[in-house]
Length: 159
Image (cartoon, rainbow, N blue to C red; front, side, top):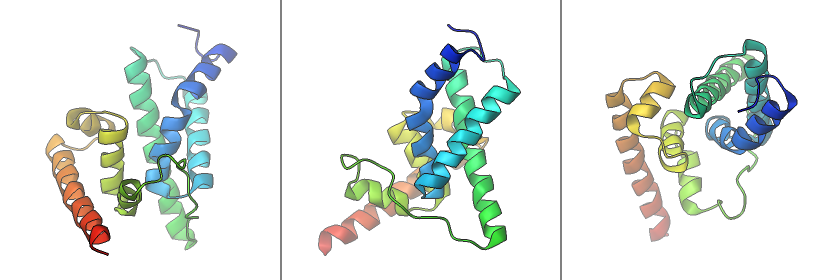
């Protein structure tokens, strides 16, 4: 493992986590530019705060937590300024499916959990730790998100 703060470390972290963090931020912000800003802010916090990680999984969870908090703070700041966030597309053509569109149409409190569970492979307990919510809350939101997705997708199939 490379030393913290070295060019090698920064390149590894950026290459390893950029895509994942962009997608997580986009599920909340719904804007490519804003998601990129959130990821950049996350990497800046990593470099300035210099947290100690026990392993790569801890590092990944910390980065996700920071990008999620940063994204939420950006929404709060945007709401205070009363300016809408950009709604441009972020995911590649391969990922742009009806299911993904349905996931992105959900409220961020649901889409974030769906993203972490299905796209990043986290368990409900791990998501609860990342989001600092009770496991029961995460499980309930995941179940509700599934019901909403089913309703949305069934509605599209009938059209």
